[in-house]
Amino acid sequence: TFSLSLLGTFLVRSGVLTSVHAFASDPERGVFILMFLAVVVAGSLTLYAIRAPGMKRGGLFAPISREGALVLNNLLLSVACAGVLIGTLYPLFLDSLTGEKVSIGPPYFNLVFGAIMMPLLLAVAVGPLLPWKRGDLAGAVGRLKVAFAVALAATLLTLVLAYDGPWLAIPMVGIGAWVTVSALVELADRIKLFRAGPGESWRRARNLPRAAWGMTLAHAGLGITMLGIVGVSAWEIERAQVMRAGDSIEFAGFHFTFEGARPMQGPNYSATEGVFTVRRDAGGAPLSTLRPETRTYPNPPMQTTEAAIQPALTGDLYAVVGDPDGSGGWSTRLHHKPMIHWIWSGALIMVLGGFVSLSDRRLRVGAPSRKPRREPLGPAAAAAAGGDD
Image 1 (tube, helix red, strand yellow):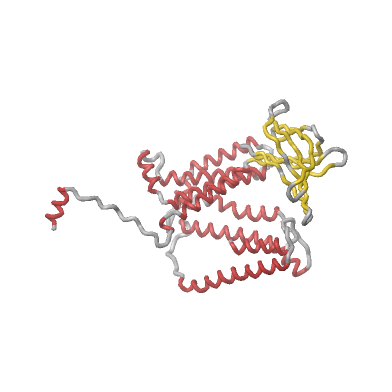
Image 2 (tube, rainbow, N blue to C red; image 1 turned 90 degrees about the vertical axis):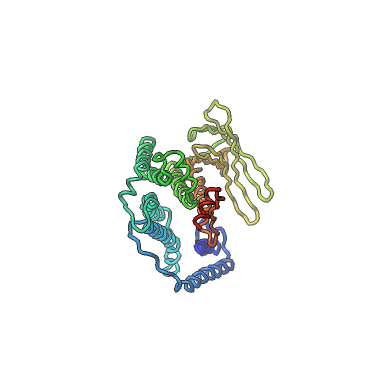
């Protein structure tokens, strides 16, 4: 992972890649990063070669088992990573070999990555329910009836609310719900929720290893993040227009009034600041005031757009102000990004799951085990022990 991050840094910092993301072009800096990348890759492979003879073969296991699910998980993630890497480097290799310029954009990455991740998302719910060594796939799937019912209900509800599409987003919402709820179902199965008394379920929950809690959090966070990605990708709304001071428009269920734009001076830049007043309806009280900016930096010459953001439970509102049209109007853009908070919330839940798993004593090498506390013997027990001696 670190090597790939260095590779991305090299591409955008050295000027090798011609892209809007290549914000720096410094061959000397690129050579340094390339040398560092070579040291990291060669060093890690050397360590692996030294340790390889000491690796021992693990025990045998059936393909349908928890070990098999982990292998499938690693294979799919590795293939997805390779697909993204090939799509990133292919234009560079083709340019260096033939001089032909090609561009690989979102359609390739969405198709390749989505096709690989689809079976992974379906299988991630089943893997934790499989036992080690050998498992029963039908039995594991049968324990996910609740998750399947919730996923089906989420799919049908999305179909009713978004009957005009996009059609691919509708089943993806169901898969996101499948992943999220299945993590909770697996946890409920471990603690025998609703199958044992509350006291027994609470005891099992307290004695559950932290790694199990971490897995539940990580899988649930993955499902929440997926739902957020689907929501933003499928139902984001964008509107561009020219507005004059005092103009109002209805957008995403809100009433926007453009109050005008004015020049302003920052510490190391000059800017044009626009002002938008946001209301629920035309006659309602103001909910917020958005102040987007277009900044110009003199050294080095650069122009940036600073969007103003209004967070909301249903999604964030973005306002952007652009250049004047020469007749008193300003180019403006408004965005509504629904469920975008789900992306960050799911990512934070996954990170929390990772830390909870790492806190498990079983995963810390050399961690001492807690010895059972010895209770003092009562008089009768002491006498019996003495008689046995």
